[in-house]
Image (cartoon, rainbow over all chains, first blue to last red):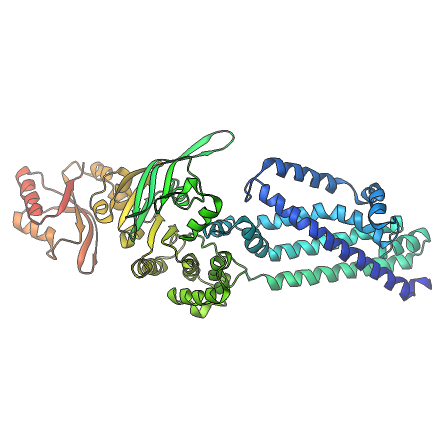
Length: 219
Length: 335
């Protein structure tokens, strides 16, 4: 009973959750954006259609997306050990989170880019733009609002996944919920963590949607 | 001198199951400084044709020359340079929605690496040309269709192109705005000497700005010549349909309605101001019925078409034709 109101228990957990979520989002986007662009460009109506490359990457992306996160977490333990030197703690959750989120983000990016009007791309070509210029100055900038909405969805999904890290002693709010709430039958701790998670998701969602709305010049 | 030459062009679109012939036997030379129109119904291949002029679409066979350079042998970088000399505007404007008007016009200068200060000066010049200086910081979504097209024109002219391709550029605009855009294109042609190629399905667009026209039908050029000639006496069926317009003005419709001899008179603005038909009736003493008339006065000259039904008497018919011959009017019998 007393434990449920021990603030320090949650502040550390919140910090860990933010750390896991933001760092893995950052790394996942660093991988997901180029991968999404590659998928877009090599697709049938893309800038440089290439069925072989598209199908190969598409298959890899789909395979990783179909593995449940909890299973992936365990599957990549050796890799996690090799990268961060440990298989427990908040840091150890980042490699599986990145492996799981990057393909997901790649698909989100691909679908955002597909929203860009092909006519605008054609206009850029008619002005003598290179493919690189089209990617940077047309595709990515024109789809910015859509990419930001995608980010809101991706980051909150990563946050949700990070809560599962508790299963391997990964730290964060999920860890608290499992250790105190589930293993020790402390309903109050469970309730508080759930409320905190809901609030954080709301906050992140609102921030990103706000930026997306503000950046969109289409009214 | 021909700035664009299209030789024996053919385009086939292949899908996995079948192939569609979009264009064949296309031979067109577009002269420097003229406004050249390409007209046809939708599906005639106009848009494909215009996209081969700047190689957005590659021909299946045949060549496209820009300033005597065969585009098919150019490397990518050379082709991009050619494209900077050929501006293009579109039916749906294709502006960058997330960029302001100013940044849209800046775009082609930005990608061709023009120094920022010089580029901004050029942008100001262009916005003045299209009369949108006060909209520099607006976004496309805040503009009307006509304003959007003017931004697109400014953008297309940023790199000082020699040719401006217009793909159904006025098709999404109302008649008044269409007239304004056409006036602007005319001015650009006259004042800047930019050769303009206009793709449209609207006859009035060709009529009001083009010097020469090619009529496209079922993947071929079926008729080509000066707008004056083609309008006066279109030879192809599709030309007649496009120029004479509505169904009630088609020759076969007149044939159905009456088995009498009918004449179609074409006014090309050279006829005098006299009331031709009335005088002809007075002089011959025989009335005629007017089956169709669509003429308008442009700068005091009449342009258009009148279809009249002649009396049965062959002598009267001859007299009437003589009357018309004397006035050097163009006419022919509706067959």
